Amino acid sequence: MDAIERFIPHLIELRKRLLHCALAFVIVLIPLIIFSSELYTLIAQPILKTLPQGAMLIATEVVTPFTAPIKLALFSSATLLIPYFLYQAWSFVKPGLYKKEKRAIMPILLMSTTLFYVGMAFAHFLVCPAALSFFSHVAPKGVTVMTDMTHYLDFVLVLYFAFGLSFQVPIITYLLIRVGITSVEGLKKQRPYIIVGAFVIGMILTPPDVVSQCLLAIPLLGLFESGLLLAKWLIPSKNKMIATT
Image (tube, rainbow, N blue to C red; front, side):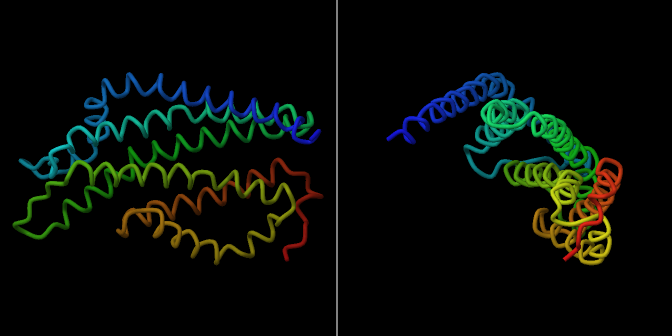
């Protein structure tokens, strides 16, 4: 009974943090829904610039012009609030951490959030235009590219999320070395397998086209190398020579 009584305050605190997250989500969502059409137009710029003259996005279902912008508003609200969600999670676990752990975790959370947004920006400004330009130019003669707005939204959201996650590679690499699971030298020896793995991940996370896969796999490899450099700079040399098995 005592164990249950000690656990109840943690449940109450967790409920409080979840309610704060839900309330913040609704508050941010309301203006995004109001301007959801303008938001969709902004997201659609990469494909609108690459479509042939006279082509446009289309809606193949009656409710699509309503549901697609709302879906984007929901995704945008959750994405914009990632720092706040992490803050609430941090506030929940912080009392149970040592000072050393608190000092170590906070920079990692900040860097991870920043890299996620950088990955999404990379997808929007570089990957989407390149992939969409490729698709529009490979269409057979006599075929006019007119993409359904829902299918386009699903395409870009998958890319945004995939690149946001892939840009976490330096953090993951650093943490693997930091906690002693592997070492810098060990990862260098595994580089050929990592190269293959990067292209496999690109194949899984991106839409089924070679351009998107390569545009994810190549940055993944660069991010992996940056993670190795980060570990070499920040981890004392005595922690780098852990057995590679």
